[in-house]
Amino acid sequence: MLEQAITKMARLLQIGFGSAGAEIIANNLSDGGELNPMVPGSKVDAIFGFCDIREFTFATEGLQEDVMLFVNKIAEITHKYVVKSGGAPNKNIGDAFLLVWKLTDSARTGGDLKKDLYDSALYSFLRIIKEIRQMGNLSAFLDGADENAPWRSTLEDFKVYMGFGLHTGWAIEGSIGSQVKVDASYLSPHVNLASRLEAATKQFRVPLLMSEAFVKGLT
Image 1 (cartoon, rainbow, N blue to C red):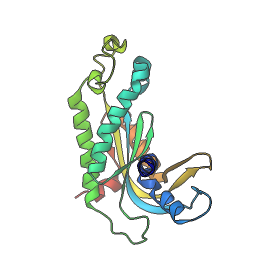
Image 2: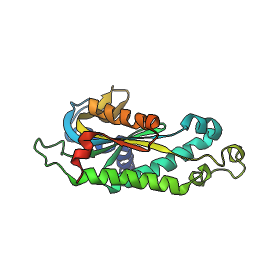
Image 3: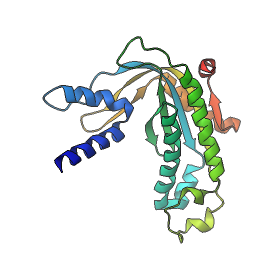
Image 4: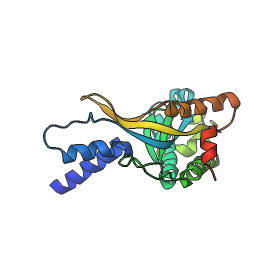
């Protein structure tokens, strides 16, 4: 029973912290004394991807409690292809997701750049776009929802669209927050640029935008 509880807690920590928090957990397990999540960050080279659900405010107002089913279905599809491509989900920010493909191992200073990850990152986003479009209307994302839910009469034909941005560069990986609450994530202007590229897809009316730096990494 105790072993099962410890295994479950370890799994929850892994899900909660993600790959970016692995070093935080490892450092605390190796050190005795008090728990200290506030460890120094480390510089990594990575591909950063941002994606965002279109018209999310409208969908939230209509779906109410069922919005969680909707967001988690989108997350399931997104995370599935990102992990298959060698990346890792980092942050789920309501209607947006930060995805990361690390090009160097943060534990080493001279890690080899994994060139194939550029192609894999792009391909994963294309597969997400394809599956989202194939699923079509909103109801396809809400299998567990009540058949008599009010939104079925008003949002039945609501089309689900997403925007995507891809960029590459360095970032500081580590814990952000305090002793009360921390998030394991990345700080860098390159992360911000990936977010701005995603935001610009609305202006240019396209599903995906890539930076020149990212495109240069493609084969």
